[in-house]
Amino acid sequence: MVTDPTNSTSQFGEQRYCHLFKNLPICIFIVDLTVRPVIIIEINRQTELVYGYTAIDLIGKPVTQLVPEESLAFIQNILAHIQLGETVTDETINRHRDGTTFPVRVIATLDPTDNGHMIVAVEDITAEKERRSEEEAIDADRLRIAHELHDGVAQSLGGLRFKSALWLHLGETAPPSMRTALDELQTVLITAIEDLRRAIFALRPVDLESMGFLPALTQLVTNFGEQNRLSAQLDIPAPHNTLPTSYELPLFRIIQEGLNNISQHACASSVSVHLTVDVTGGVALSLRDNGRGFDPGLVGANAHYGLRHMRERILIHKGTLDIHTAIGKGTELLVTLPPPEVKNANH
Image 1 (spheres, rainbow, N blue to C red):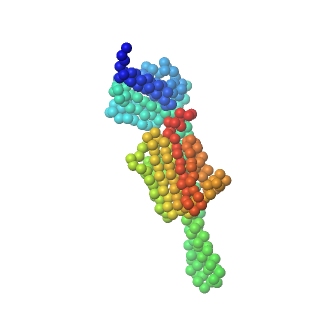
Image 2: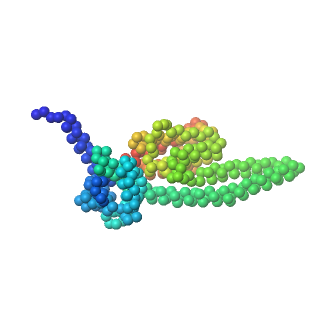
Image 3: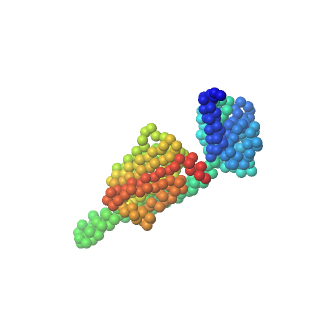
């Protein structure tokens, strides 16, 4: 018997597609756009797990069954854009079978094989939202502390520096020991004010949502160089892949923490930040300085160097941190974060 190899290849492709559709770790819906209201015609296993419905419960039912009343306008907005041939990515609220609501990220597009159908991917972002809320609370505290330092301690130190300069001018005929003490006071005050300004800079949050990740990161690195009077370079090879949204805030904080460590401990004159994102969403970050370095054998015990907090952020996202350094040779921090899909699949 002669078989058609083209047909065999087609069948294999369909089987692989069906397996992928059923087992993806995000919710997938196929929606019929030719009827009103639009109805669900196919779902995968993850959808049943997340929403609490079986396929029999949902197939043939309107998609509005899965959203609370306040999100109905969101559905209409998606349909309007899809009918224009656009792909929509947005966040909204959906509803479990028991009536409880939860935040989701939605990606919707026309089925490329049938313009009467829409493919919708839905990701439960409850944990991500909780992390964002924690980060927002931390940012609010950081901003409050930065304002208090600027309006309180920084102003007091500035006033004291001005008075000490005046005392030094008025004390031209004072004993040499007094003038030496006033000179030392001036030096201490100048150093303290510079350190405080760096701390205030490190504390001030950056509005990633309004600026976007790359402009905010560019501003962070540029301002860091200016504040610390060193050469700071950001290198993101072009063309670059899009950084997953869920990584924007944690990665920004990791870089911010690394730069803060450099300003406090490295005594560096140059810093480079090199960031790459692969096609799967995996991240590789290099943060290098030409400072004094340190003994890598002391990393575990040397908690004051500030690496512990950075390592904790990285481990939350199942990433890795490698440190290359030696005394007098500078330091390079190498951070990797896995593709978000891989991370989610392990949960």
